[in-house]
Length: 300
Image (cartoon, rainbow, N blue to C red):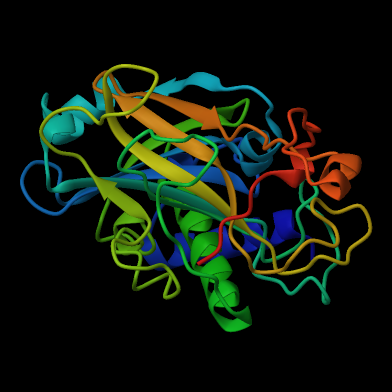
């Protein structure tokens, strides 16, 4: 069974469980699209989760330039969580996705170059700092936890497709406010430590709060999330990062959101790779090789 068919099949099962109708489904969603979610733990909007598709994980993994204004959510954030949503300490946001919950050995199909059980997860970034490096710490999963996490993220995708509304165009859209009483909304994943046991304290989300974040090149940053990629397999011909470590967190860059609800992505710039001759001579290299696949690896 292909991953696309698997998504459709499980989504149909969720329809039966939740009572959602076919007319209340997101259309145009593709497997491994990143889902951005918001969750309030008190006050206005606490009974709903706001979710949106922001594009394929590969589009952020592969980009060599920043992506400004991926989507503007100011209007729906204000109507759901209040005009000052970006000042609330009880409002959280995070994101994630997976290619499938199937072992790569059982299904070697690649999704945009990613094997099965490849997951992408966020972690709170507190300051801009050196954009080459992650500003957060995330631990390395084992085979069990990455398998469980891929299943959880697939459930999130299926719930979004079945219970949300709208159309995803160009990887972006399907913006939905889904009751938290629905199975597998972002609210179920916001704590992070529950659904993603290898994620350290704080989970996959960041809380908003008074004032803007400091150290960012762009002004008015209200929230920021580091993006990490984890792969379960490294031996499938043609896969992305073939031969590179399994399970290790790869830092891909970070997302920012301003008080207008505009979401942007800052790609991690490439490290300078010393020329072999310079290393042999013991010299400090001044020139590096710009290779996307040599991006910095962040591991606990």
